[in-house]
Length: 370
Image (tube, rainbow, N blue to C red; front, side, top):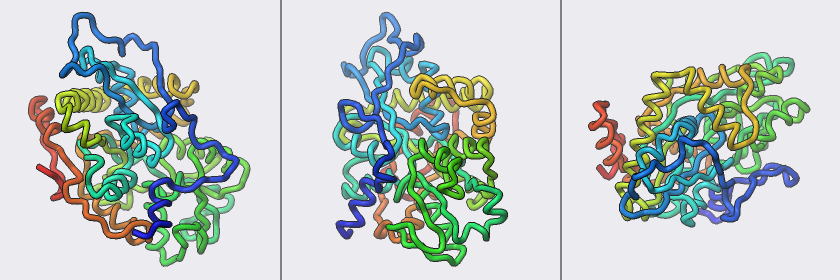
């Protein structure tokens, strides 16, 4: 892969030099996420799994990562881990989380498909495995209705995506190509101007009029609607059965090999979280919002939280066939050379957990080690 393209895919692109991208912790990758939540405390008399002191878990402050948010807030991960302490770090960008995984700053993470593909291919299949699914959907194209009244009006406008080469960026570039329009993927210039903007900044940019819309995940999409935007396209409408992977669970291969019982415990917590979310959507929505507030200092308002939550499906199925399609979209956009994704999934432990819980097992669409 050419060095310049590799660099873009690994790190994304600085949105605007003056805009903050991440609040960095001492590790240099993500924000340490502390909590006084009593549900996260280690139960008296519990023992460590394999004698391991802690496992470091990463996720984003997005509702599309609500499995992690709810699993943490409800203490479901810690319950399964016993005296092995669950420690957390939050991220705003996939490349940063991949770097943290590669450096050992985290062991397991919730992440979108594009950075997972990128991390796997850049390491020649040695850095990570996708070990489970988490969520589908929750991505929308929201526009200024005064400037864009139909999808054809997107041509000639400035549309934000979170980061060059990230999952939403790839999806938007693919949609642009399907319209017969031309855009240089690296610069974002062409029939549509693609403006790579951190999700934290996008609502302010939209309000200021510096962008005309955005192809973004929740809750950013609903934040734009609250600012007067209009949802003109839900990405789920472009996929068979309206399902596509938006969040996976990844693990360092080194950690998986050394501590499979700990990984299994985290997966038990994840399956329990999704089960509770789907059985108790109102309570789960509140729990996810509570954790978002604990992480960021600010809860989502109901006019943002409610529509955002309703557009996301929570599932243990990694929807592997759609990951392969998303990789093809990145190749089509010129952001990725055709990857070899064989072996990117290891669903052995997930299927063990699902069987024990009486749930249907899932498959890797021919891309697994089992």
